[in-house]
Amino acid sequence: MEENNNMLSVYFLSLIELQRSAVILAGGFSRRFGNDKGLVVLADKPIVIHVIDRVSEVVDEVLLVVSSEDQKKTFEPILENKANLVIDKDESQSPLVGAITGFENAKGEYSLLLPCDAPLVSIQIVQFLLDMCTNKSAVIPRWPSGYIEPLQAVYHTKSALIAAKTALAQGKMKMRAMIDNLRGARYVSTMVLEQLEPRLLTFFNANTPQDLKKADSLLK
Image 1 (cartoon, rainbow, N blue to C red):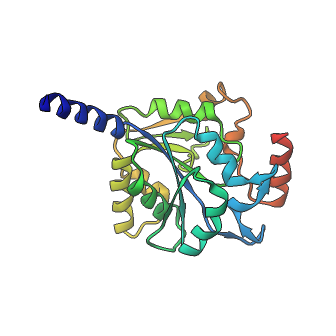
Image 2 (image 1 turned 180 degrees about the vertical axis):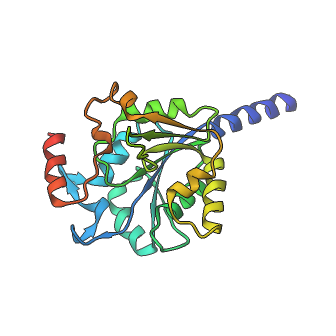
Image 3 (image 1 turned 45 degrees about the horizontal axis):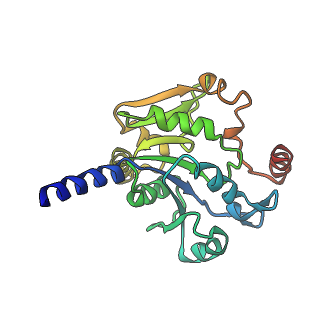
């Protein structure tokens, strides 16, 4: 009986390890919006909630990485238990540092990394990226120009955490430095992703008030 219980425990632990996480970087204060970008209201709800609501359909947990205790307090009232808030150890507001914090707290074997200002993130595309990441250290979209999308990509959580910490220890703060340290990363052409979402609005970021108006019209 005890042996059976041990086997069940191992089985359920393996399920936990196979979970998929979403790590969303809240970023910092936006001068253009006069507020944290994730809190800017779009189509009657904060931008970050659009992101959370969409990705929640394809992952087992959502983590929102904030840079300080004060920022945590500003996001808590709007989340309604939709995501777990985690605070950066370093207030540098670097995406790399935010990614490290997210990966350290993620339970999933694979983590979808996203910015908070991508309200049109495609469920079909992120599901595809998650599915493609099995046995890979990362699956990263790449444009024909060679430009990559490290903040809308999927990573093997433990591998990415090691790679990110290595980059940071080397004094490198760019996401590209983390990716350069990964072995077995896979790049997916945006031309392939166009078959899932022809307009590729998943990569649309609301960086200006004009972008916000455009996103609002696209969500209607």
